[in-house]
Length: 291
Figure 1: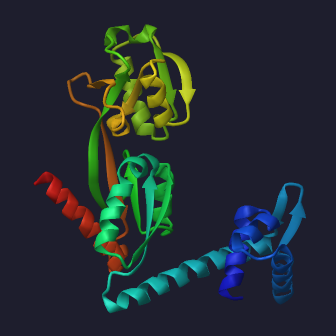
Figure 2 (figure 1 turned 45 degrees about the horizontal axis):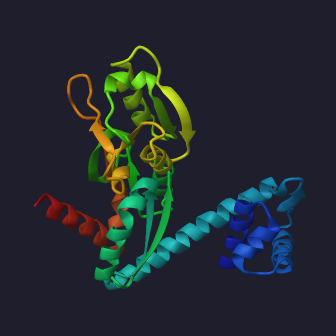
Figure 3 (figure 1 turned 135 degrees about the vertical axis):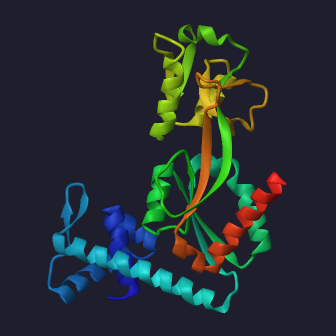
């Protein structure tokens, strides 16, 4: 087996479809099918079979996929180590970033970093913070930028802290909230969901009047800005909506409900010059902000 075979197995396994895998790999479907057949001859075992829902891998095939993923992972790490032997800041920096942070902060941050290190290529994956943390744990990315509270035992660096806010198009009386239309959005962080529910239960004996449920904070804010209800969102999402009525939420004892952003990475990642350069860049920016 060669590197191209590892990539073929991984891609077909992910896509569960020969045609889609061939398109992603930029090879013809017959060529891809032929290569799989050759691998089956080499190992003397059936690797894949055609099912009603697409390609299905046999137990032997799944074993080969695991091997292929391990080999691709080790090959990538070896290439990164070799690139870093000359002490230059070069190579690919792989980042996993929370969708909200990626939307509001990441473009400016990366523009500034790349301007200082033009030999670096940036690879970014965005998604829920739980997904980003999984990417870091599996070493699929060098650095993760997460929102909210997460269990992480290795290196971390606080990036931002912002309050949770109640927002509306016009000023409203908080005591009237149970009778006012609320716009909900999907909250993937259990801690944030608990904080909002606790805040509500400390003040009201009836549930909120939810009239709309949407899949993102951005959609929620847009609906609020059009006067369709109120929302409860982290203030990071309000950078393009300065005219809204905003009131920071407070706990029963008067403290603010804070949403944090953390940068996390493995201890061994600092052996790569590109990772160390990015961490140092972030630390420098934080120090300048405080200064």
